[in-house]
Length: 339
Ligand SMILES: *Cc1c(COP(=O)(O)O)cnc(C)c1O
Image 1 (cartoon, helix red, strand yellow):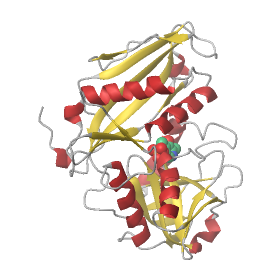
Image 2 (spheres, protein in one colour):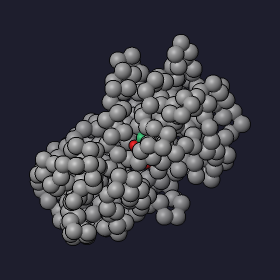
Image 3 (cartoon, helix red, strand yellow):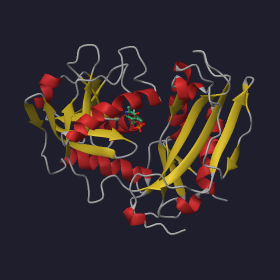
Image 4 (cartoon, protein in one colour):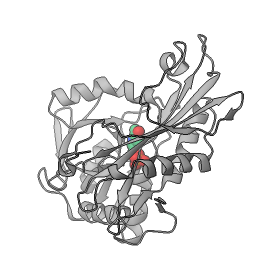
């Protein structure tokens, strides 16, 4: 195995082992680790025709002492089960989910990047409806699989702001599946994302689908803004995907930085209140937002080239916790037993 840890991006790399379990007749089998990275599924599978599938994304972090941390994987399990409920899929019991993730990390431990490289092991749990079917109804069988690959830090030379553009498209309906981590939301985001990239923006900003006056999501990440009077503000809406990174930052903003955490409306015509803004999610942790294009108007936050001090402090605090350098709030870090 020869991997250049310092040059990893975010692309598929085959690691030796993945976990695979099947659900049939009302229960999960015990599942197993397998080397086969192809799924052989029925042509009538609901995941293929009707989008009956959901997924998760989390990371394993190499500590200074050589051990491996998972960051709040129990929250990924709970969220996957909420997504599954929304699409009439069976739950994956939390213990089963956590055990599968730990088995996969342990089996592929040589692929967890070294401490200090900034790189991590990205873990992708996936739940899909399979089996013989053609009508619009829940699948008779399900596959739960977990695979992983090493990925580089999102920002190689430090946090760099990028610009975003407000989209005319909606990513979700007011009472639709916006809060569920389902593939359909992502398929729907490909064209808006493409159009934003064509215009040289990092991604698009989605507004609330009901009134189109409030910021909801930044591409496939959550939004936050920091006000001049030290409020850390994130949008609140039933069509936003509840980001685990976002909730962790709300906690750290309050308890480590002494900011006031606020979940509320972020009106597009009130962006002046923010001195810093960013997008957050597992992949990048935090992407500082330089500016937002909205029609003819271009609004700059802290700077188009420099990350703001509070954003940087939050990033350092959260990544320090994830890599085990800073004491974590109770229950945030799960050690992966490697023996
Ligand atoms: C996964 C996801 C996020 C980020 O969630 P994290 O738990 O922080 O990784 C944000 N928005 C969307 C649409 C997502 O799918």
